[in-house]
Amino acid sequence: MDNYKIDKDNITFYIDTNIYNDAVIKKAIYNFIEDRKVILNKINEKTVVVVSKKSNDDIENFVKNFYSELLNESLRFEVMNETKNIRELILGRALYSTCIDTEENEETTEKDNKYNINDIAKNWFEE
Image 1 (cartoon, helix red, strand yellow):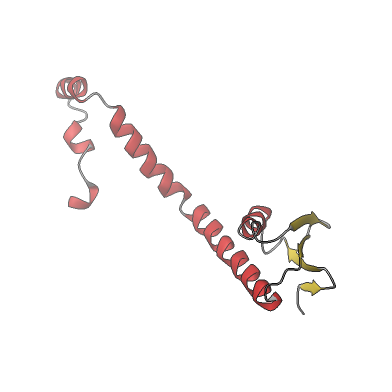
Image 2: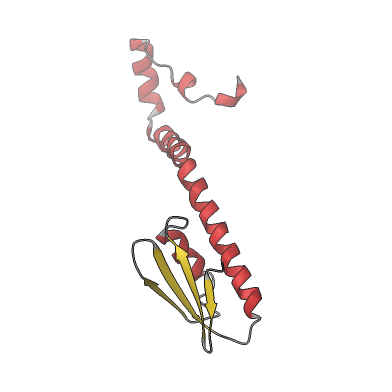
């Protein structure tokens, strides 16, 4: 069963929100917004309707491209969620190392013998 309908003036997609969340659908639509007029409506909790005005383009090609774009955006969204923690750690480490006043901290660490700036700032991959 196809999840789209082609009528006289429009192509209507029925998108299951259990498969694609709202952000993914909106990003996929955005990639086509310059070429087509697009309307986004939510029927119920599980279904979003995307209506696109027909144009002179190849309709079957547009349908394939739209579903491919939904898949692409869905994968990007999943990768973004899976790598969120590591990106936050990298950013935090980069910002933290730029906030350290090395002269002051070297004196303090030598007295305390708790931390050494050279141990903190070394590359993890060199070991």
